[in-house]
Amino acid sequence: MDKKTIVVVGAGQGLGNHVAERFGREGYRVVLMARNAESLEKYKAELTAAGIESHVHTADAAKPETLTEAITWAREQFGTPDVLYYNVGITAADDPATMCSEELMRHFQIDVASAYHCARLVVDDDFAAKHGAIFMTGGGLADYPTAQFIPLSIDKAAIRALAIALHGELKLRGIHVGTLTVFGSIGIDSYMSPARMADSIWKMNQQRDVCEVKYEYPEMQGGTATAAEYWTKVYALAEKYR
Image 1 (tube, one colour):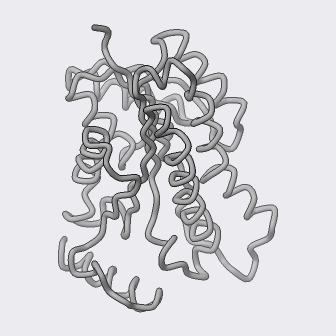
Image 2: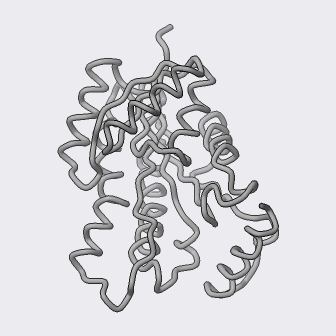
Image 3: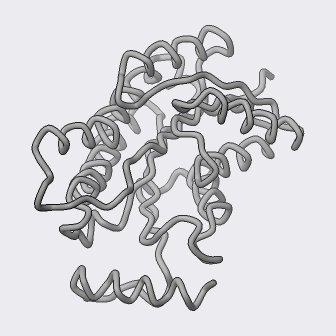
């Protein structure tokens, strides 16, 4: 049987590459996509050194046409993928006093609209026949929005809505759509380890029983804090787990 393929849109030293490595260890061919060609070649070399077949192609989530070209190339080279993982997002804090609608829309294109674009590029009868899967990186700002992260708060709520909507639509065709909602800063401590999160995504791929997995500090689960209280406690816990 031909080797399975995962396409990772948003390769990087954080969660993107760890998901690629996790699936690669299970025998998947890895196709990494990001804006920086030099970084992609470095990531490819690292995966190759680990014995994982990997390929790279530049693409910019701000420019959907580059995603179309990259995913079309991947399909021509390796056939219909088995898994698409969208891991792109602008995570820097913003100044709410200067945020304009144009900037808000730029964030939305990168964080959400291009995820939808990629999903539509892979979903077809072949993808359904393979029982393909689509995963997206969500964030706890969807539950606890803040003024310092207005675009990201909006966009993480939107990526959850997108995943849930696509999950309901595509499960009828045997396609699984899921999101890992991360309630913290990836890589900040041992609990927020991207390797652990990659294990969660692998588990979602294997079990396919839920649309959303919330990755949250155990101490914060089931609480009723306000957004300000929640993130204050999360930053304190990051010190605990370092």
